[in-house]
Structures are given as structure tokens and as C-alpha cells.
Length: 125
Image (cartoon, rainbow, N blue to C red; front, top):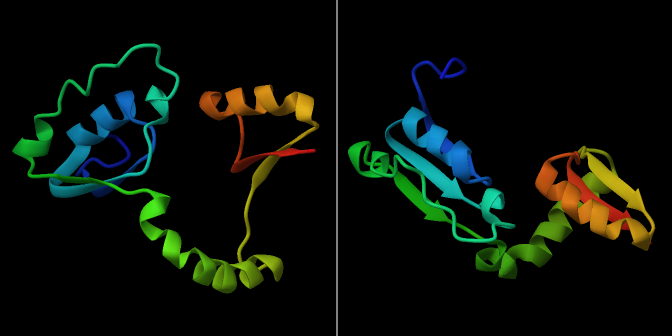
């Protein structure tokens, strides 16, 4: 709330859990939530309860919609054609974490859920 004392209009949801709950409290009336992931739930051993304040979707007339890459798969070749050269010539900068060797794969995978990587997590074989 300190970072956005007047709230915010758009929230990109990729975590779920307490992060989503905090966002629901801070979104302004008519706000939108784009849901791309719920990483906080990926390794849950049993279904986790939903946010305790889900009623905020109704009270604030929020719109919450999921999206996933498969909805846009037909655009992927065009994306590669346009963005690939921009990455290759340095117009688009990126950060990635690279682990070396197949043996590091389990640790690299677990690091995704601990948030210890920066950018894309890769394993070089």
C-alpha cells in the first residue's frame, strides 16, 4: 500500500497466494487482473484455499482473466521473425540464469520455485 497509496488499475498475476490477496485489496474500482500463472500453488500437496478477500472482485467490479501461450501459438513464427533479430543485434536485452550440466537440472528446477534465479532459468548440457 505504501508503494501505491491510491491503488493501481492493472495487476499481472503470476504468483497467486498472498500476492494475489494483497493485489485484490489494493486494486482500484474497475481494475483488471491478467492471470498468467499461480506459481505459489504449483507444488502444493493439497488444494490451497483461495484468497480470503475474493469478494473484492465483486465489490470493486474487477475483471480477472487468464491467458496462456497456447491461445497465441499461431503468432509464434511471426514473433520469432520480428523479435529474434532484435535480440541478436542487442536491441532487446535480457537476463538469464544458466546452470551447467545435466546433474544440476533438479536444483535448477527447484530454484524456480524459490525465486533464486534471475530471468529465464536454463541448464546447459
